[in-house]
Image (cartoon, rainbow, N blue to C red; front, top):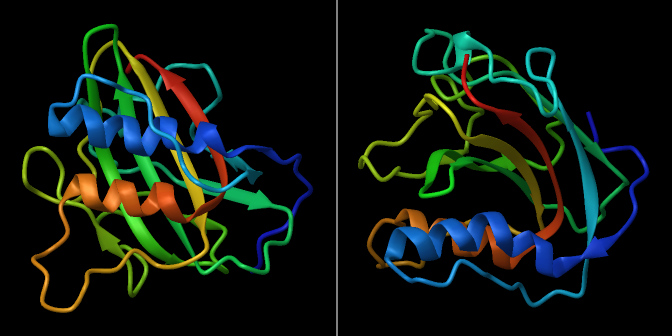
Length: 191
């Protein structure tokens, strides 16, 4: 399946807000503003049969449930430069920002993931180590804003030959630097 659907281009500055914000926050930097170098990005429409924009995160996909990561679907205008997809799930409260899941190098032709994809991710994908040190989906809990952001990238996230394994800030930086389209579905508070 290919990526399809028309979308309006938006300023590229917005793409850095999720990925680079979290990278800066996790690295201890006080500034939570990130900026990417590209001029424009396309919009990705993100949906889910289980999540609704602006509504509470269902219990099954929170720390109180056992379903793991929720199913997600996405579409955008045709993007000939698309090489991969990345998903970043993060949460924000007035006092904290946390990353709950980063799945990257999803084939660019993929337009959806089923429930609990963190346990059986698509072949060839990677999952970033979370602040806990483990990769995978760390279910959100309690009050907050939970953002399920899908990025279309013009390349894959890669480790340089001989370099140590990628850490979360480096993965988020590569996602921000390679983004050509972005969209998100936001849930508020966990049931």
